[in-house]
Figure 1 (cartoon, helix red, strand yellow):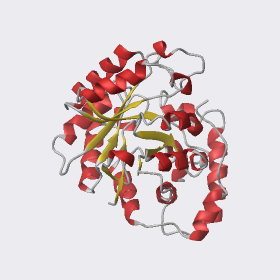
Figure 2: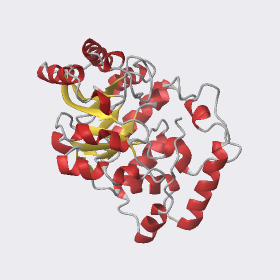
Figure 3: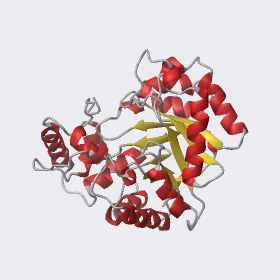
Length: 322
C-alpha cells in the first residue's frame, strides 16, 4: 500500500481508503455485519489506514461497526465521518436556510453522537454531508467548526460536495476554513479536474475521491439482466432503463481499452489515483474479494498512455442521483 498526504493536515493516508456506506446496511442490501467486519480487518492488514463513514449510514450503524475493529487495528487508523443535513435532504437545495440544514447546536449534537458511536474522544476528520455555497457567509457552521476543534472533539474539518457539483466548493476552499473536500470523481465524471483540483492544490486541500466505480457501473459486471433487491439504493440509482445505458457505455469503454491485465474496476481506480490532487480513493467494499482487489491497485502503478487516452474520451455527462 502506498500513502499520500491529506492536504494541509499532514496526515499520511492510504491511497485506497474504505468507503463505509455499504456496510451500514439498510440502503445496500445483501450484506452481513460479520462479513463487513472481516473485510474491514483484512483491509487494515493490507495497509489501509483511512475509513470514511457517516452518521446517516443506517443511523450510525456503520460507525458502530467501525468502532469494533479500529480499536484493535494493527496500525493507527484515521476515521472520517459526516454530519447529515438536519432536514435529511440530499443534495442541499438552493434557497433553503442553514437553520434547516446545519444549525449550530445540531452540529455539536451530531458530532457527540458520532464520538459515542465510534468510541473515540476525537474524530480525525468531520465533514458536512452536503454543501451549499449560499451558507458561506453564515456564522453557524463557522462557529461550529471552531468550537469543535478548540474543544478537541474534531481534529480536521471538511465538506462532502453535492453530487456532480464540484465547482460549488470553490468559494469555501478560498476561505481557509476547511481542510478537505470529498467529491465524485471517476472515469465517467472527470469534471473536478477542470477547476476543483487546481484550487485544492493551490490551497493545499486534501481530496477524497468518492464513487470511483460509479456505484458499481465501472466494475464491468452489470448486464441487461442485473437487478437489485427492493429498497436497495442501486435499484433506484439504475432505474428506468439506466442499466441499459450503463451496459452500452461500459461495453464501448472495454472495447476501446482492448485486452488488459487488470480488471475494469482496477483500471477505474488507477484512473482516480492518476490525479495528483487526489489524496485517497474511497470505494465501497463489503467482500474479501473486493477488498483484496481494490487494495492491490495501489501497487499496480500508472496506466499506460494509451489507456489514459481512451479513458479521457469516455467522460459522460449524466446525473443518476436526480
